[in-house]
Length: 276
Image (spheres, rainbow, N blue to C red):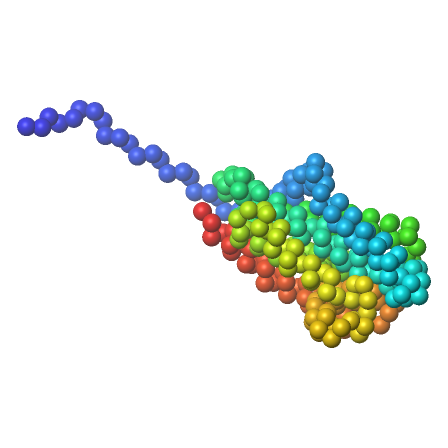
């Protein structure tokens, strides 16, 4: 005969209180707070900004003094042609690698698991990382203008057009950042993120009108450069900074930037939201 137990039955733990719905504007506020965290990391480790300035500046100096005489007849004329392309390259490199790698490292270290336990929007860490990139673009673009001016580059339009060119380059960098954010969420290991980004982005940045007009390129490279969206952004910045014909390049640049954000931002947020 079994003796009934006199010990009290275990009481199931109380369910955690339901999280309050986020207030309007909370996602913006949380994203800005996390952007400040990303910028604080950049102060301690400014590698992304340095890459975004040093790499394009090295390309600029090497191309000007190696090819300036043969392509444009003088280094000064070639710098006027080359600088807008370098500006677009710098805006892209300064941030697009930083977001993908930093998000991937934070996820591997469990930082994003901590974020999920906080009463913040699920996409706030992603938005915070990309907003921090915008500040990195601005620093990289300002430094590139300073280095270009020291080498002899001069804006031949006006201040408003120069600001528009800087905004166009930064906007395209912002769009490219969402591609690397998607990579950072999707793949395992920052080394894989870097490898995919370099394999994908170097042909995208160099197979353009950066170093020479498209109509002087071999047929196979010209075919690629003509459909490459980076060519349209470089041509648009060249028109705004030096007064060359713009054609449809400004509208095409805005359309490509908006399209990249419209595709890769929802993909990155959805991939991040699927994880538990």
